[in-house]
Length: 320
Length: 202
Image: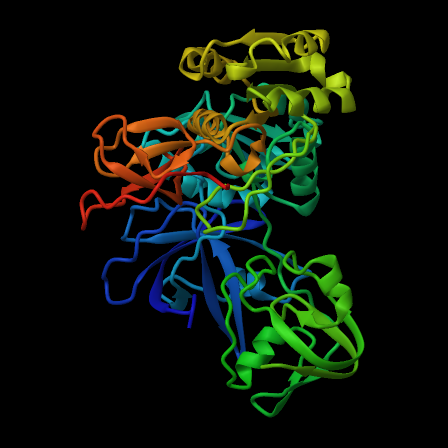
């Protein structure tokens, strides 16, 4: 199945980077080489938390050509469903885990004359791999990295030391904001912009760039959504002839998988479109949270993205 | 003027649209022959953007018919080129100095559109972000797939390659990289058996 080829790994290092972010390093259990990847790729980490299996995507931040290890950074989310808390509190060095082959939904466009990176908070991680990739080919790039306060500006010191003229940090609590207007108006023809961070930042930069006349093809962004907890609900899987119960902390996709039904996926974050599922019948309301379906599709009641979206109501029948 | 409506063809064959004003910091317009009409129409729709426009125009057979009208638009810059090859250095300089936010508009023959699009692409403008409108002759810029020589403004099919002399059949197979359609030898298996030439789309 697409995107589901698995790799057995061992947690080889855990590094607490700041109050919120911890970095995990994985190596192959059998000591072999990991596949190379392209900067911007993510891996899906399987977390067996008691009887619950969670699969969360994380951008790989290590050097794409370093086949000895993958590193990811996990930001603790106390309000989330527990995946990041599991990583922070339960995972220890030496633990065996399962991750997916890398998948890239946020790759560099190598036709670009210049790569302009805009990062917000933990959104820095895909850029760390992309910067390493570009440095090998003497690529032309520039990073604008915004965080709440200096103590959360993980990687700033390291980046500034290595690339003092290419990296500009900004701290919200010091009233520093990216000067987007002057930044966008002075870029040479052929520049591509890449944005990774909170939704507000992505929307702001996309809108400004579009207003300045940047073509859509030159604007790239990635925002993974974590599935939000919600009221439990029941769904019928028509093809498999099964009725499943989706728990409060479970996503619809996870419940489908737990029932032993194979469902396609790539990002598990509402971005890639791989898990799109047809709705055969419903009585209730959908809670659509993905970036994939169009507004018309969302109101049509004919489609759902089970990785991040939920349902509330009496009846839901899916074509799965 | 109503543009020529090309019949549906294979996927490789370029399709053209109708120019419309897009928001942007600067506007680069490259046109030949009757392509001037598309630019004049566009400028009349929106007077504000013409000050920020750089028009590169190659009149070809239309000579001075549209030149005065283009001057009256009062564009930021107007360059009149004697031929496409003579205008290339001007196009490259305009692209080299351009910033992101530049909008590109191409109007005229397929040869002009294809070659100018190629210049824009090599400056990093995504080809899908370039607006095009076909105007004037349906003659094509052809590459001989055998000798690789280019024959400009081909209107009769089949035609004789001006480089190697083979009889070439005009295909709809197009190369964006070469900005040319592909011409393939029509009498390879039976030399001399060449059908009468007919004008394209007649």
